Image (cartoon, rainbow, N blue to C red; front, side, top):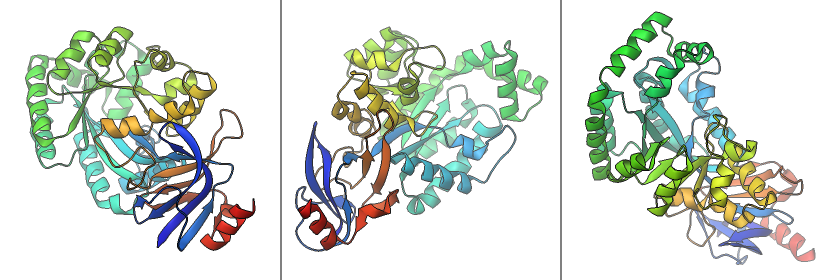
Length: 396
């Protein structure tokens, strides 16, 4: 028996849109085009696009649910539940929460990283999106190396990134606005924060060996690795030599070209596409996509961005929608090592979204199916028992 039958929509199959039916049984997609037999639920998808669910390999918008204002904390389980709803309503069916474990206390502390990991592990069965743990290790966070290495060995980390924001942190000490934000985030006094930065910077000579050891553990565990904000081709080469095959937000074209030439995955932020440029003034993602120097788009700090970015790329003539969609579905799934999703095909995981694209640049998500379950429905008139649904579609 088919659990859900999606009928009459324009489904993205490979690089073509085809009007067809998608039966879903259990967690997987059945034989595409088949609408035989009984089904518990039918969804009338006429006039809608049927697209693979979005795979978001880097998103930290959940931090705003944990600490919506500096010093204002909410329970991690509440924050995760709200973030899950936001992700699903924006078509994200696989979400990697990019959790920064830094040398600083507060929001990005080891305590919060532990709480978040434990919450994800315990709440995962109850969350609609397939929720995974992406740990961003600040490379100067030397005292955490042993614990993080154990997490990697135990298979608790789904993606592992090397971050180094120390140079920008030191530079921001002379910029009052940025300095205040950093200090507020940690909960320290200004003097205590300065003292901490000095102590951490003094251990910089220990960082390369720590990176090497953690990369070795990650390779042994089979964990995919990313390097964040690569500044030069040499930096990208050095990380690649340690098995880090995903370049996350390279800061200039030369570095992106080095990554592309070697076949690395290259991640840019979807908000960059939607806004027409980086909020930091760095590389424009749409230009990188035009030049073949971007293979993955991530939500970064804004869950609606991947959906909006794909339609923006199509409207601007950068890529056809079918190819733009690969940047937020098939390619990130491949980068993360998830072979069971990212495309609509028989025996693939049933992660799909139904989209009304009538209004240019403002796609509206009508329904989301995640892991074979109807997770979101914005238009109840689309939901029918299968026999009635088939009659309606046949009469159209």
